[in-house]
Each structure stands twice: as structure tokens, then as C-alpha cells.
Length: 443
Image 1: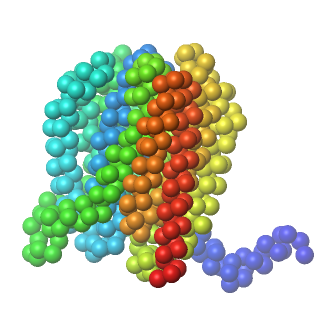
Image 2: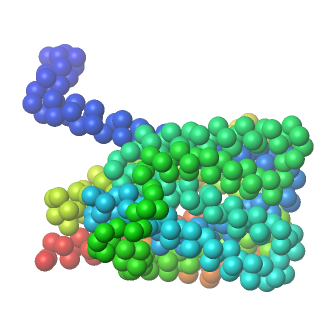
Image 3: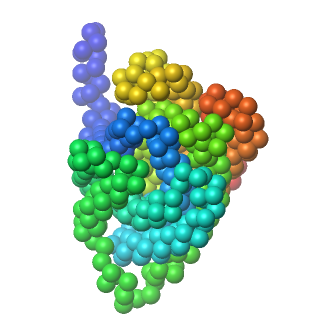
């Protein structure tokens, strides 16, 4: 029997019909999710590449440090609002999505106000630690964080009812607005670190506007006839779920985000720019993996209610396999052709002598894919303390062995430390998920 006939018989069989039905159901949803993350990561990737090409390495290093500060702040926003949103929302408030989202948006406004105040209070200490920073730059970062994080929140909210197509359309608006503004500012010779944040903020507000109306967010939802769903209740539930992730965010800051500032402190702003430039090249692949996680977490949360609490653990090997295969497919060319990629993307010859850093960054990213896969499972089963211990393991490595490596060898030390910290995270996550699966079988 020829391969063609054998394949045809499979597809016309009952199992083949079910397979085709599943493919028609899943491929568009996953495709929209990847497109959504692709538009976001593509816009930010191009912005980072253009900044690296158009401004000095020292100034780009300053952008890397301030962006690490922004990501540090966004980690708490993610832990208290976005992470609980995608798990608690579909599991408990599927019939009250619009009201629930309105209350979460109000909590976002409160969070933004608190962050702005804290950042201004801490400004003298931050400026004293890194002399290249200014008070105005910190003010711009805090103001921009409001609109950027609002957009991130509403994008994830679209997945509560499986509207990955809506999220992808908003991300496309973000892409067009950001790139158009970037080239316009470059033509006017206005491109700098502060204006880059203002561009991201404006693009985020426009994209968030697309989502706001479609998601049915309305302040009238704050005054319902019954009191079963209140801001206080949402806040308590989010805190109960997210408190371990808050702790994990602190650990994440010391395991991942701290690298760029540490390099700036030990090796100078230009070295920070090099590390950030190399991380840019693997960022699109990381965002594809994030897109998969963004899609699977709320879906697994729903399936847990339908098929039982242990369902995400049962399909863990399949989820891990999907993540790892996709990660290797996209990251392997970066490992094999890293030198050519650096020369193709960057016209600044300063980066050419450090193309070897990209190999270590890519290898660390491949290992990190496993962490993303396991984290997707543990989030869906509300095992959020596992996120903390995973990040804590990475932080312990960075603050001990990693710190010594960075102090001794600068960028070379960072490269080795990146791989070491991700390996420690994988080991802890594998042990925790194995322990959880063992407990599930014995109960």
C-alpha cells in the first residue's frame, strides 16, 4: 500500500475525522495567539533594534537599565492582576466577565498610582546608584507604565472567552502605531530614550482603546444590584492566588532582570547595551513561547473544572513536548548562525566583537523554554508557590556563583551565569511538578 493511500485511509477513518475536527478547532486559535504575541514582540523587537542602531551604546545601555526597572514594576502588576485574571476569571466569573474586568481595571488604576508614588520616593536612591538616570526619565517611565500595563492587561483579558483574534487585532494596531511613530521621530531627529517610552505609551493607549469597548468594560458595573462580586472580593482572591507570585517576582528580579544593571555596574553602560542587544535577537522566540502559555493557561483552567483538577498534570508531558520542540525549531538557527545574524541586524560595529554572547543567550533561552512549559501547568492548577521556588533557585545562583562570575569576567561571566541560573530553575521545577504528580496519584 502506498504512503498516499495509507494516509488517505487514516484521514477518512473515524479517528481521522476527529483529528481534522480538532485541527480546525485549535489551529486558528493558536494561530491568532501566536500572531498576537508576534505583533507585540515584533514591534518591541524592531524598536530595540532601531534604538541600538540609532543611538550610542551608552545611551542604549541606559534604556536597557530603565526597561529592566519597568519590567520589575510590571512583575508585581502581572502577579496581582494578570496572572490571577487568566486563572480566576474563567474558573469563577465566566458568566460575569464584563463586571469582573471592570473591577480589575479599577485595581489597575490603583496599582499605577501606588507605583508612581513609590518610584518618585525612591528616585533619589535610584539616581544616586546610576548617575546616567534623571528624575524626568523616571517620571516618564512611571507615566508610561500606566498605559503599557493597561494594554497588557486588556490583551490577556481577551483570552478569558477565547478571543485571541481580538487580542491579535489590538496588537496589530500597537505595531502600526509604534513603528510609524518611531520612524517619524527618527526623521525629525527626536529619537532618544525618553521619547521611546512616550511612543510605547501612546501606541499602548490606542491599542487599549480597541479592547476597552469590545470587552464591555463600563464603570456602571461597579454598582450592581447584588454584592456577590465586589472589588474587595476580587482583591482578596487575587491576593490569595498572587501572593506567591509576588514573592516570585522579587526572586525573578534577582534571577533575570538584574543582569543588565549588574553588567552596567561592573562593566559599564556600553556592556549593558551589548547584553540587551543580544537578548533582543532571542526575544521573538521567547514571545512565541509566551504566546503558547498565554493561550494554554486559561484553557487548562477551564478544563480543570470540566475534567477534574488533575487534568493539567495528566497532559503535562504533551505540553512540555510542544513547548520544547517549538523552542528548538526557532532557537537552533540562532545558535548555528549567530555571527551572521548579528552582522545582518546591527550596523554598529561595536556589537560585532561580542557576537559570541548571543550563543550563550540562545542556549539559556532553550533551557528557559522548559521552565515556561512547566510554569504553564503549575499556573493552571493554582500551584503558584512553585513559581516562587523556581525563581528563588535562579536568584540564589545569580547572587552567589553568578555575582562572582560577573565581577570576575564581566560579559563572559554573565553568559555562563545565564545558563547556570536557568538550569537551576529547571531542576527545581521538575522536582516540584514530579512531587505534585506523585501526590495526585496517591490521593
